[in-house]
Image 1: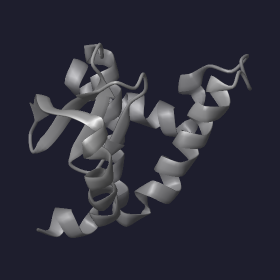
Image 2 (image 1 turned 90 degrees about the horizontal axis):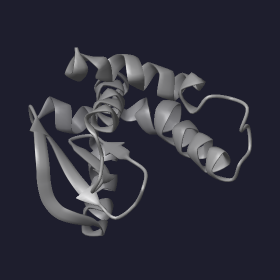
Image 3 (image 1 turned 30 degrees about the horizontal axis):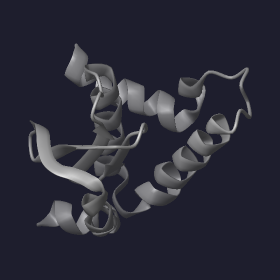
Length: 120
């Protein structure tokens, strides 16, 4: 119950995102559900991770890293990680900062580190 309150903004937002997924759980990591969707990017919102249907283990681990960030930051996650990460992905998708590695941005570097627990 405390976790739900701690991550309430992410969980509420996930309720709006779930209809855009396949609504099929492709993996469980503890109480976190990984769902596939038709988009090419991943999204982590509290108890739910959304990944492309073709996502590999590294991508799932990375998104799980964002989930671990959410656990640590709670209600601040969307401001500290979610919004900056989304903006970084959009800018990279537009071809901006093409000379900078995607995973060098603080949100992504930290997610890689946090998600490495699934790969090690």
